[in-house]
Length: 188
Ligand code: PNS
Image (cartoon, rainbow, N blue to C red):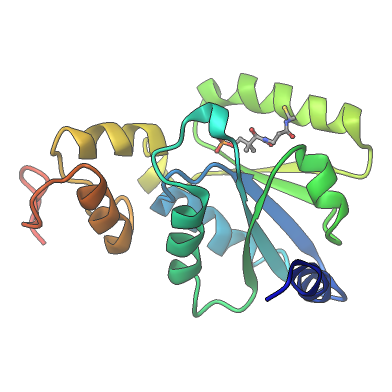
C-alpha cells in the first residue's frame, strides 16, 4: 500500500469514533499490566489507540515492527483497539487523531514523579491534551517491561505476567530453550 493511501486509511480509522484515548508507551514488550489498562479504558472510551513510540534512543529489545506485530495479534479480536506507532512528540501524534486524552498506567508512587513531569510537559506543549492515569490492578502493579526482560533474559519464568506470544518472543530473542519454565511453587 502506498504511503498516502496508508495516511488516508489511518485518518478514516480515527474519524467519528466517539470518545477516543491514546495509550502511548514503549510496550517493549507489552505486559498483562498494559492489557489490563486497555481493557478497563474500553469501559470508559469508545476507542483506545495503543500508540507504540519509535524511540531508538531507548535501545528497545524489540523493533517497532516486532512490537506492532505482537500487540496487533493480542488485540486482533478487539475492534475498538487500534494499534499504531509514532515518532516524535506525543502531542503532535495525538493532534492527528480525534483523541483528547493520553492514558497512562500508574503502578506505584515511584511512577508518579516521571509521569507528573511528562504530563506537565505535554500540557505545556498543548492544552488540547489531558493525561488520564489509571491505577494498574493489584495483580500487576509489580510488573514492568524492564523487569520482564531482565527475568526472561536470565531464564526466569514470566508466564502469567505477559501473554504466551510474548513469552515465546522473549525466548526467541534470548535464544532460550522452548521448554516451559514455571514460576517456583506455582501450579498451573
Ligand atoms: O512506556 P514508556 O517508555 O514509559 O513510554 C514513554 C512515552 C513513549 C509515552 C514517552 O517517552 C513519550 O511520549 N515519548 C514521545 C516523545 C515526547 O512527546 N516527549 C515529550 C513528553 S516528556
